[in-house]
Image (tube, rainbow, N blue to C red):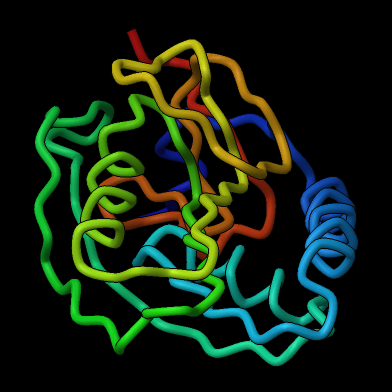
Amino acid sequence: MDFLKENSLEVYLSEDEIQAGIKVLAEKLNKIYGEEELYVVCVLKGAVMFATDLVKYLKMPVKMEFIRLSSYGSSYSTSGNVNAVDISLPNLNEKNVLIVEDIIDTGLTAKFLIDFIKNNFQTKTLKFCSLLDKMCKRKVDIDADYYCFEVDDKFLVGYGLDLDGYGRNIPNILYKTDVK
């Protein structure tokens, strides 16, 4: 299957633009956290590329944790429900915690995860960070504390974002031009 040829995809953000945005965010986080230890909680699978690139630029001691949530029902839209596939975390009490997600759109996943951590731990700080923020799709009153790019209401794929499991390895973020 030639994924790119079989789907109408055009570049939305180039690899260079993505990396530049991540570096700017990392500089901000370095100033905020200084030398303090930071727990980075990466939401799999979509945020893995963003999280690994982000932590490369962080200067403080970092511990990475990975959780797996799911909210997508069909190929192009969220189901409206958040499923905790694997949400085992170490003791985060009195820790600086940064949740790292690929995209915040409806806000349901972000709210679920923030509430989960708040209900189970007494963190020192808890912040939510997203590569992409699709504010126009918000269903709950929640915002990313940090994000790299605000995006339009388009179906995006690449750089961790997928279409039926494909496209995560594309270094650019593309948008699907033929989604109705």
